[in-house]
Image (cartoon, rainbow over all chains, first blue to last red; front, top):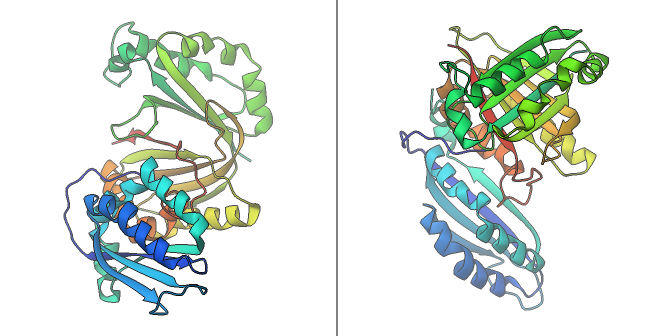
Length: 124
Length: 224
């Protein structure tokens, strides 16, 4: 809800995944706008772009593609730094503008199974 | 069934320095705090009453928190109709106060855990959630589960509001008691269940967001 005030103390890799299911024929436009309008500001919030995956791996003119964009951040503090986007009217506006091009989207937060104990103990 | 009434008061800049526990003299902030403390004294059915200055780090969380517990809704109604409630209102609407908002709620769902030490930091998140009833139920279940999943709270309680006064029509209050401020600022904030699961209801980037951005995050020392 709010950002922690302490300096970064741990850097367990954390992954943020955007899964964007484009409306038929709109995947190329979704990818272009994501790259142009979202990626630069996200990088400024410390997000590292790891993958831009497309399924099926051919952009369809009449069918729907799913874009899976994978970002990396450094631990919970890096995650909260990236989370500033959720309070930024410019970022929120981007998602509102993209919504008409999408059938559905999800955002997920992941970590390696081997890192879960370290993550749960952060801050204690 | 206990009903709570919590008020968040934001002082005008000139009054802020005098609201803390070390304040002395007839400064405006001290008068506001005294008015809050006097406002419920002796009220019939009053079970719990305290006023505390907030700690640095609140978000729209004001400078003073007044927290009252009554034995039932009728007791709250009788208090609000009484002269004791009306008398300090002048102090709360005067030049020393820039904003005042209150929530009446209860009984809610509550949990508790034994933790070492005697410190206590009270935190309240007053929020507005906009969703259908099924989605609200999922949101409430996940939010309440933080008390079990994140083992750094002595007590926690999630309630829907019965009534609300102020600029934001809050719908819920999520209250917790932590052993010390860093348990809230660090352990709670950094726990993966917080940012990896529950925060999506609040995050403006998330397609699952239902909580409006004008929430009130406030906290104070109860004991140290």
